[in-house]
Image 1 (cartoon, helix red, strand yellow):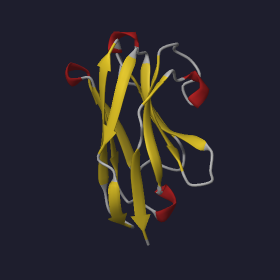
Image 2 (cartoon, one colour):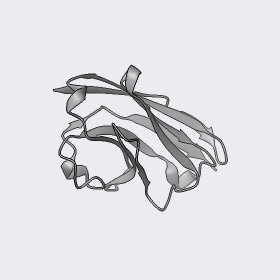
Image 3 (cartoon, one colour):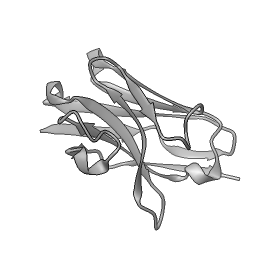
Length: 124
């Protein structure tokens, strides 16, 4: 089992920045990659970014590329999402998740462990 706790969400004006954190505990050594997903009200959960746990290889959704940066700190069992130039359409509940199978890294169905989410609201 892996336990995940997100933090860092909040209310910010368009153009502003937030930094999300995800603290992991438990069997974190089983993780191949960790990812951020988000779900807006009435919408589907969508992929935002992911990073491989050992090599730090990253991937981003086109909608956030160039504005968001994902990183991890293996020693702290933590993952981060630096979000800059935020837009109202970034408003959503943001989740961190663990993939321990090594494929399907953009699909939420391939992530076995999830946090409770942290709310990000961007006002126009």
